[in-house]
Length: 201
Length: 239
Ligand SMILES: Cc1cc2nc3c(=O)[nH]c(=O)nc-3n(C[C@H](O)[C@H](O)[C@H](O)COP(=O)(O)OP(=O)(O)OC[C@H]3O[C@@H](n4cnc5c(N)ncnc54)[C@H](O)[C@@H]3O)c2cc1C
Image 1 (cartoon, rainbow over the protein chains, first blue to last red):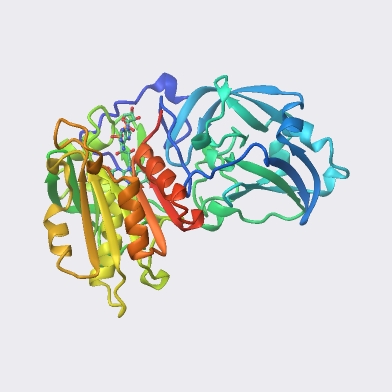
Image 2: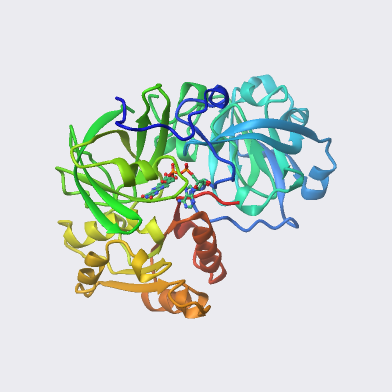
């Protein structure tokens, strides 16, 4: 349906090639979170890998910061419709984290879990080969708490709710399971190019 | 989730930069207070864009629902709503969409509602549900509503009436009413401390700009209100 007299101010065919359907370009950095920003203390901060309920491996902040870093330059797409172009992140590749796991190929999914109780599920293969990191800086600065600091998952190819803020760990799973927003009706996979916002999209 | 159409049956001018749109969908919309819809606009070139708007009306009114749109001067969608849309126009939308930011009478109370500007929209739906819903036990609600000046208030005609119900307690804060900084013109720590003590809320709902939500949550957490009992909806961007 054509909206009478609607001339999209942001209708820029050149730029919009880079924009998934239904998204618009935002210059600032909005916040999507289900609740308040949780206080996270670096002295007790841990990043963990869980297999079932068992902690298979864990890093303190210092240990984590001494891991090799990678950089990602990418566009990001939030399910609340904004996209942000050319963002810069630095952090630890999940490939580095997964090096610690024996029999990684037994698992097909992961659940990212966070300080504050948030969870989100992803296929393991979408987080490998440089496609995902635990970011600790954004645009060269320490990641601020409202944007997920001290550390958040970044998986740019999926809607940004998959890029869990305040990450505490990753649970490896053989079978897929719905995370927090996914249980509330948001899509299990969340590909912005297929506009997979909600169940059945 | 499918796209559908709704007809604008009525437009209510709330103030100089806010309008409420009463919408009649094809099929009645079953929603819970706190839910929102996604609206999609399409230009003649085929360009499309979407935005979210909270449902501000009473969920048990089955024939129509309402959204309340605040004008963001340099925006793309809100000026279209504000300046262009007229009664009888159609809009395309899908929904209801919702996450944890919702309230139903079964969830109980008392409730603390903190609204910044147009952030009052979904909280109005909660209040209406409590006042007009057919549940027996009315829930005590304290609402603190912060806006720039009296002229920026939304639903002022209703909020006056709401205070006739002894279980609803509104408090108003005008952050730019006088040219001077007056700390009592903001929802501040003292106010929240007293309120938490006197009403003992079961859940707090915070809705408005990102800055407003961040500021309110920081105060609630500082006052040791439990993290998991705070529900938030952020309307705008942050820097
Ligand atoms: C879940 C949800 C529910 C929402 N419910 C409502 C609602 O009930 N009523 C309502 O009016 N809005 C609501 N919003 C905000 C709404 O979706 C749009 O973001 C808003 O109408 C601005 O869109 P626009 O196209 O006019 O501006 P845009 O073209 O998107 O933005 C133009 C400029 O304004 C800035 N901007 C965008 N939004 C805001 C804002 N809210 N405050 C200050 N600056 C802003 C942008 O950063 C940008 O610089 C909601 C948002 C979400 C995510």
